[in-house]
Image (tube, rainbow, N blue to C red; front, side, top):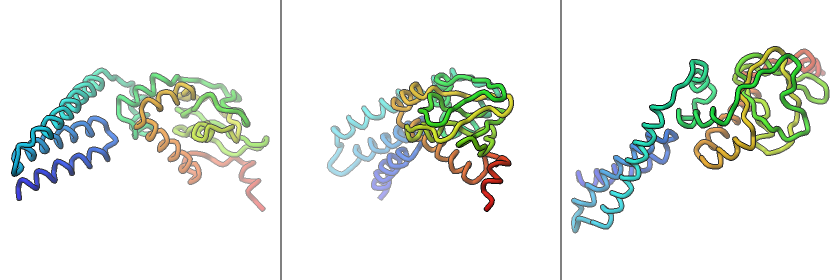
Length: 227
């Protein structure tokens, strides 16, 4: 019946909203779901069910408030051309507000050739995303690879909260977006959706490195791989 379709739409939209990573879309779907729920519970045989309608109204008000808040936050965001490109590529899993929160925690860092970003055997105090230049990775004194722009440095130490397994130094003039790990962990703890997105970003970076998409084998690494 048409009324049962309305009921199914209400629950279906609620389920769909829970699958959304964009918080604005999640809230809008939650608001529309509540509206269908109110219609259903008002017209249902034996109704109206005022208790259900009341609480659906409360949930709708919360969703509406958050929609307005998110829109206002996004209106106040202005990215540079570089930041827009970074958001569209490396940080595409974050919405605009989340990306701005990351930028507020991070800082630009510039390195001359030979400058060390990370030492092996220590807890990394920074997580780096290479903006331009190249970073050489070494292990036990042997060069392993050159990381290209877009790659992360210190991601294994950050993900596992463990000692770094290799050293990293700038191979040429290099700029990075640097995130102090303590501040970044605190930010991600306050925003679980951002924590999931960051885990996905760094896991994807590791997969890209394994596939050879974000690093260039160095000569010593190539020689060591030969029998």
